[in-house]
Length: 281
Length: 214
Image (tube, rainbow over all chains, first blue to last red; front, side):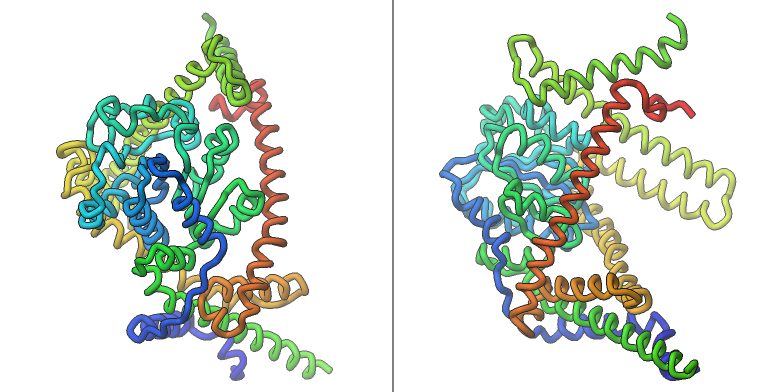
C-alpha cells in the first residue's frame, strides 16, 4: 500500500484521538480568542431591553436534556437578563423535558432571584408541559390561562396574580423560544406571530439556525442566538461570561481539526487521482 | 348506524367540520357566533388527546419490552429489563409530591439523564469529523462549492475564523443570508404548498391513511 493509500484509509480511531487531544488541550490551556458580537444576537438582547417596564414576556423552553449543552447557556443568560430587568415573564414548554430543565436553571440562579427581589407568582411563573405540539401552541395563543389549569407546582392559575390578565398572545409584549426543533419556531410563527403580530426572538441550535434564516431576514424573527457561538456572544452582552464563552476555544479547535481533515482528505484524493492518470498515460 | 358510516363517513365529517372551524377561526374573529371560544376549546381538546397519546406511547413501549423479556430475544432482553426498570423508577419518583417537581426527580433528570443524553449527542462530533475526512471529496464543481462554502461558514461560526482573517465572517455571513436563505425559502414555500394540498385531501376524506385503513 502506498503512503497516500495508507493516509486515505487511516484508522478512524486516529481521527477521533486527534480530535480529543486538540479539544482537551485548549480546554486545559485556553487561548482566549476575542468573540465579536453578531447583529442577530445583539437584536435578541435589545429586544428584551427595549420593552417598557412591567411588560410580560412569554418564554418557551422548548428543549430537553440532549440539547442542554448548547441551549442551556442561552436559557441561563436569558433568565439572568430577565431577572435583572423590570420585566415579568411566564415560562412554559411544548417539550416534555422543558419544565425540568427550567427548574434546574431556576435552582441554579436561586441567589440571583433572591437578590433581584422578584417574587414567584407576581413577577415570574413556571407552567407545566403542554402536550400537543402546534395545537398546544395554538391553544396557548387563543386562550392562555385556560389551557393550563395549574402551574408547575400545582397552584391553580386563577390564584396566580401574574396570570390574571393574560388571556391571549396579544397580552404578551414579547415571545421568546429557546428550541431544539419541533415543536418550536415554525409552530410559534404560525400560531403566535402571524395571527397576533407579537415580537419574536429565538435561541436556536447551530444546525437549526440556517433553517430559520428566511424568517430572520424577512423580519418575522426579530433577533436570533445561533448555536453555542451565539450563546457566548449573549453571555458577554448580559455581562456574565460562563460556560459558552469558555467553550469557544474548544469550538474553534474542533472546527480547525474538521477543516484540516477535509483538506487533507481532498489533497490525498486529488494526488491519488492525478498519479493514477500519470500511470495510465 | 351502519359500520361503514361509523368507520368511514362519520370520521370524515368530523375531520371536515373541525378543520373548517379551525381554518375559518384563524382568519376571522367572530365571538358573536361563538367561533373563537369554540376554536379555543377544540385546540384544548386536541392538547388533551395528545397527552393521552403520550400515555398510550408509554404503554406500547412497555408491551414491546415485556414481550422481549418473555421471549428472551437474543441480544435484547436484558436491555429491555434496564429500560423498563429505569422508566418505572422515573415514573414512581415523578409521582412523589407534585408531578415532576420533587428534588429526587430533578436530581435523576439533572445528573444521570442529562449526562447520558449529552454524551450520546457528543459522539456525533467524532462521526462528523471522520465522515468529513472520508466522504467529503471534491468530485465535481458542485462539491467544490459545497466544501468551500462549508469551510467559510465553519470559520464564521468559530472565533478563530475572525482571528485568522476578517473576511471569513463576512463571507460566511453572506453565504448564510443569501444563498442559504434563498434555498431554504424555496424549500419552505414548496413544503407549505404540499402541506396545503395534503390538508385539502384530508379535509375532503381523500387521504386514506388518515383513517387508519391499510
